[in-house]
Length: 263
Image 1 (tube, rainbow, N blue to C red):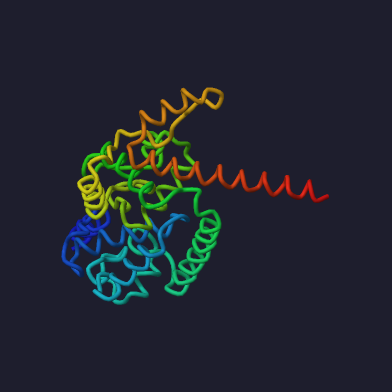
Image 2: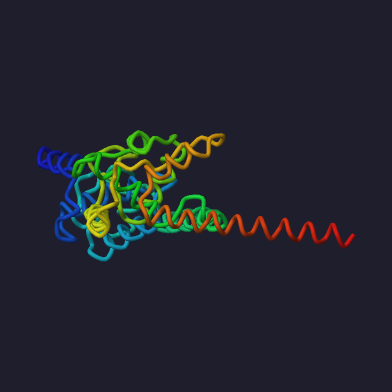
């Protein structure tokens, strides 16, 4: 009997499970437990994903499909939360609620800071353009981490962390339960969005550079680089922005001359 309990314990603790399995089943419960354990340890984790998995394993009684360190099924959600990893979550339910509140508070402050600088990271087009480069360079189910994001986008680690978090919050990537913390994979929704975006606008080439380097002291060379790198619509939009800027400078100069003449 003791041997059988040991085999079951090894199976459920070492098995990565399957998130695609029916909710409430043992493979699903095993995979969800790993997701929750990973998110609880990640200070930059998505509160939305964490709440979803916690709610799911409680509502579908997935914890009943899991065993404790003595090889017995968990009788309640509370006992599952209290049990130490790798069998349980290692926190009482009320402490988990507090962790969720603290994560929400931190993320709310981050969002508030981003809203104060709305142009610092661009619009949805910029998100998709960057994400499409990642999707192109990563096969289905390929493990992705911050280093990979930085390598693909040619950015430093701190900025790669920011893009990782944003894509995670959008549901374009998800944590890998079969890997250690910090590894993700592109979701089906993420790949679908990229495919639709590319089909809608054939000019959305993932090989395009995200940034341009143009010489400040050579106007002709700068113009040639812009013409070579941008399409007609982008050049037209750039032309309008430059025109507005020049008009504003002209108005400011005129007002300055008028004030001088009156004085």
